[in-house]
Length: 104
Image (cartoon, rainbow, N blue to C red; front, side, top):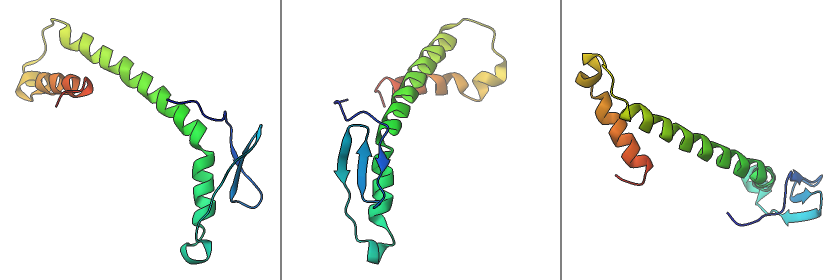
């Protein structure tokens, strides 16, 4: 990810300017009189970008950890109940691992 102006960002009093502790970040334009406040909604969405990016990175880490756990579970030789195989859970795990690693 490329660098960005550090957050937190906030929407200014006019509800169409974004600020951070370093000053002005962006102006947001929209057709407020027709669409019911798109500029303000867009400003709030943009102002949440640093927190959204941080949460995305956090979730990617959790996903990577879960993938490693699934691989461990899949590799363990144990006596699973017959219904596990009848319901295809072992196949689902293998498909999930393949998809998470960029397969189909």
